[in-house]
Figure 1 (cartoon, rainbow, N blue to C red):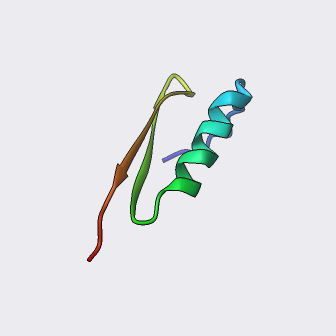
Figure 2: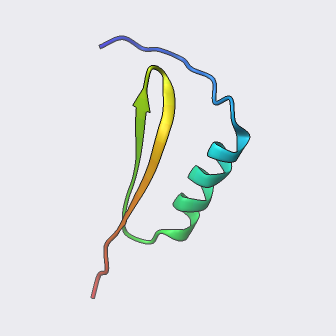
Figure 3: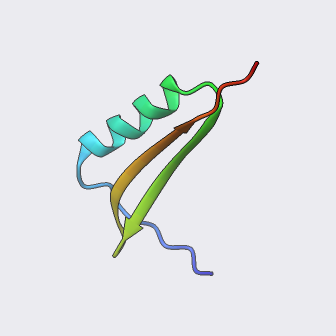
Length: 49
């Protein structure tokens, strides 16, 4: 596995990722990357009782 650094070109994407992390209590924030570009941000929320 290689360690590649890539630049987030669109600051809106970074804001969306931060917003997703701040709003979730339990779960996952999944980033989908194609050709070194973030193409999807997916949030899976878990409810704990």
